[in-house]
Length: 322
Image 1 (tube, rainbow, N blue to C red):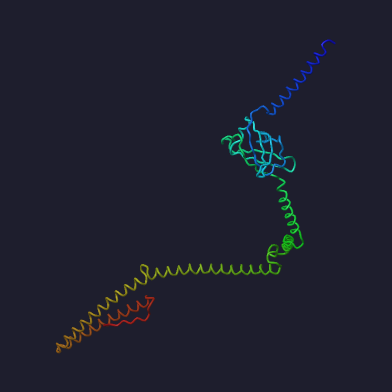
Image 2 (cartoon, rainbow, N blue to C red):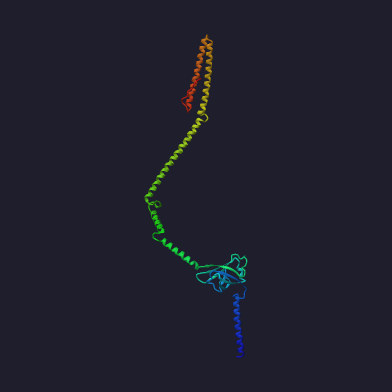
């Protein structure tokens, strides 16, 4: 074959060119030629973090660990290269965490609450908050142990739960008796029977009180009617008070007549003393006057008797003439 060496040389050159192109593409894809800025994370413990680990934001890688070293203060210094295109997700208020689960390696995460804050400057140093699940295992084991101990105490024979269940079962058995819930509340059927009898007696007393109240209501109504009738007969128009007032007026009139007659009698007596000779005429006038006085007194007596008959408050009334 002619030109075998030339063809072999071209094949080798082509192979190396493809390898170089592949390596260049890989380096480009890995962001080797992209501009980056440096971020320094300070952690108390960098266990689980290795060079080449990713710094993620919302599940996407935004940086790569380039170097890990121990500072003089005893803290781990983690240097992360962040591409310029991904630096927009990191702000001055961003929070960085180092989480390590039960399975897998440690994970660096970034959280940004407000994307409107100022961008994170190049070379910024930020602390790392640890979220190690294994650190919580002792506390979790202690909590589980206390829970198991509490469960054992609750299920013991002399535990409060068993005593409560025993009391509940006793109450349930009592509720299945003759008086049901009342027996469960009072403790025995005898107490429940006494309570039912007491309730019956209370009902009887209440019924008696109800009847007494109805009787009192009837008596009250009757009393109101009696008072209304008495008020109408005594104080009403044409009642005893009006008749008494009229009788008193008549008595006053009769008494006035009597006083007038007595005045005439005094005058006649004076005339009899002055005129001793006209005895017969004076005697006749005295008899007529006496008759008139007796008539006036009889009228006054009749009026007094009528007042006593109509007046309901006084029966013994004495009428004295002047």
